[in-house]
Amino acid sequence: MNDLIFRDQNESLASRASAHSEASTSTTASASNSQSRQPSPVRDKAATAYFFQHFITPGHLSFLEGTSPDEVLLKTILACGMAGRANRDGDLRGREVARRYYVEAIAATNAALRHPKRVKEDTTLTSVYLLGLFERLTWEAHASIESWKQHVQGSAQLLQLRGHDQIRTPTGAALFRDLRASIIANCLWCETQAPEYLVQWTQTLEFDPMYTPADSLALIAARVTFLKSALRTGDKDDAELLDIAAKIEADLLDWSEDTLAGGCVCSFHSVTDLVSDHSWNGERHEYAMPHSIRYWNMWRCLRLLVSWVQEAVWRRSWPRIPQTPPSPEHFRTTRDRIAVDICVAAAYALGNDSAAEPPRGSVSSGYLFITPLSLAGICLLEQLAEPMVTPGGSKVIHTDEPLHLDPLSRTSTQLAWIIERMDYIGNKIGISCATAVNRFLKGESKVLYDLGRSRVIMNTEVSADIQSDKLDLSTVAITVGLDG
Image 1 (cartoon, rainbow, N blue to C red):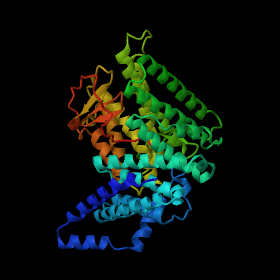
Image 2 (tube, helix red, strand yellow):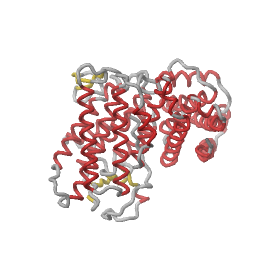
Image 3 (cartoon, rainbow, N blue to C red):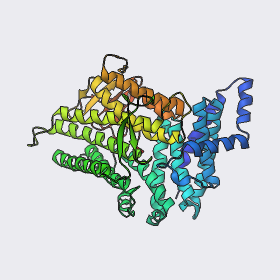
Image 4 (tube, rainbow, N blue to C red):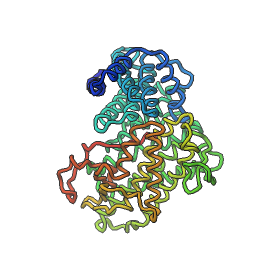
């Protein structure tokens, strides 16, 4: 396993850390920077404790509970724990320390990747995964996007190198499931097909009522990656795309019926909640198992992505295709209902009191809730903006003004509510990626968003006429991911 995966990031991160350090020109700041470079057992202990308290939940990184990390993994844990804690406290010095820990973690991980035995250890693979999570915590526009994608691609290579036998142990299976979600997320947003080994290995996992629903959903998600890849490349004609999408939609609906059936440990129900700051219209979800909200939010995101693809393909293909397409109202009603469900799920994910200290596991819960909230917000922007339609069938919205400030519009007020939850994740929980995505929802980023392809198009990167059906978005940077 070569270390080219992380070499450019190491240099880039070191440069970014140096730039932050050089920005401090006063004597006091220089002294602080010098102090921040010195080892501090108290600071390290606090960062490690913060990581184990807020990054681990029953549905995310649960295999780390009660473990003693080796030197490689500990450096990455320190970087993530320090970054999360510094973000929450607004501690600029702490953020610099976290960046320096990150540079050290990359060096240590590269050394493990070059070692014939350590390259296949669980701690090395976990470290690679956490390096990607660090980028979501400290999101700095394009540099973080590219670093996150490299970490995910690196973890996919390493996962395959370790071989199928890794998933035979409980720790290996849990690690596989967490990494599988990130790899599929990267494929969805890059519009590439999920690796075949992910599908094959998932099919061989033993039945477990706690996790088999997630495995079944992952297999459907892999088919969605194929759908989006085929839409981008044109490998399938429109009739084939619609047939693939219809089968995926039917299987998603079957999954929801089976998972809501009596006795399933991953079911949920709605309850009245007039107390929680995060309940939507006095309603919240209660899930049978803590990790099942992750599965359901992934299901909701997949339904939205497939719906946008279906509408775009129908719009460009009819009446060439003899079947009668669903009405635009059908797609809008479906997406409205899913957007509401995502909002109702917020209180379970984020807790009850937005003014109190975020609850245990808050970084994990907030991190996994960014994409569902983002897509729900995009559903509302679709209604509030004035979409342009390309000959390729996609609707494109231009977010160049705030659309969440109209108190007389239910759609606008729901968007404002979502923005408040994203502010909570970004500022109170301390995940910088949420703040970056929120700028888009607030209309501050001034970008174009292709709904059919679920892609952000940066104005500075687009030279083609928006009406051109040859607009190629394959290299455009993404801003959100589906780590469901």
